[in-house]
Image (tube, rainbow, N blue to C red; front, side, top):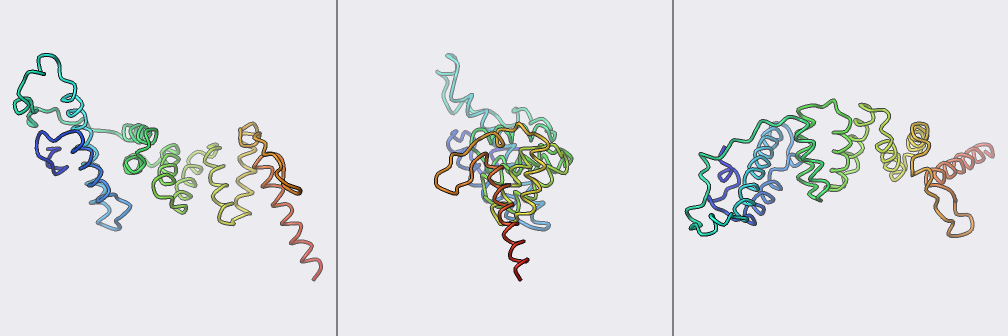
Length: 236
């Protein structure tokens, strides 16, 4: 694999040129922009872009910090021969997942999204992969439907994933799906009654404002709504 060709660069490109080319092509070939057979091609292209970027990033980092002997060498003579460069090792799902997590930690959400997609494609049975996908979607695209699908998959694979359960409850609550949100809040409380979200008190701001934790506020509000609906039905 020639990483320069994949990133459409000339040999000896600078670190900034490598980074710029990667971001441009990753945006162009992001799998979420494609459907059907074209999506599979985009996934393959995106994976190769990530591998090429990883290779050249290391090369550029080494070139930017020469040893005293290298410092006196003519730059044109110090370029690395790609034929001699070691081929990247075959990565497994856990490798892609760890790199995706690292990208999330560094704020590179688009790259994290693409990488965690590959982890899931290689091993779709890990709840933590789906939970990371949900986080990447929320940060990179804000697509609530895609985020909720990933969260549901995470919970299905790991029913005791309280953080995903709470986040899904918040999503359902935000779009008016109150019954499902309430059920998830109750499930989360059963799993982890001491979770910070249940202990974090919110001060009252005005008369009639619900006190207690966010989850308690929600449960009380739902109770009021249900009570009001019951009274309305009884008055008919």
